[in-house]
Image 1 (cartoon, one colour):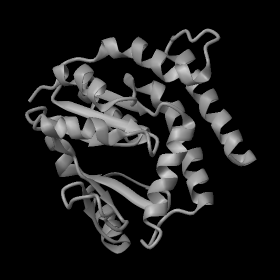
Image 2 (cartoon, helix red, strand yellow):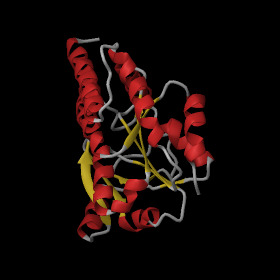
Image 3 (cartoon, helix red, strand yellow):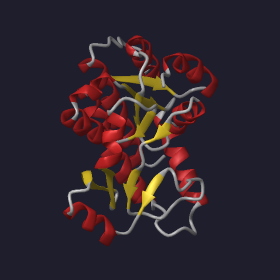
Length: 238
């Protein structure tokens, strides 16, 4: 690991400690790799039956583990509008893929909620789809950034009663390895990230993680899919 990545790793664990402190979770003098487990144990009791779930986490944290569980439970995804190419593993139901011109046209027309740019890609939600989720009649989930989740709760206070899940990988090095491996597999795809862009993404997402204390997130250690499903599936409601 390069000196820059080691510095980023240190920043990641400092951010985790800050999250724990602001959530009132005592971590004592444990090894920093134990913080995700301690955060899960402290926050998991706030899980409850809900028709609406928000799943967040840094790239490579394994959000798909919870997403797959929700879909098996009959939940449908609140699709994000994005201006990037579809990845091979994604289906047409995962996102609404469009180009910059169309996105900006929808933005000017007031059709989008929280249009913003992350990693040089535009993101938003169609307002009509968000209203369907906030109605609470359908089992729906959203894979959203912390910033987007905060804005949704500000606009729709009743959504604060949703289940908010923030995924944590076992270690920072696991995160980096997963994201770098994904980009290596997709080298031939236009838009694959360079090492510098990967570091920039982590810097942005670590800052996002620090904001997670503004929402009642439950922090889940993604160490084993079977364990996570056992812990969470009892709280599904449709």
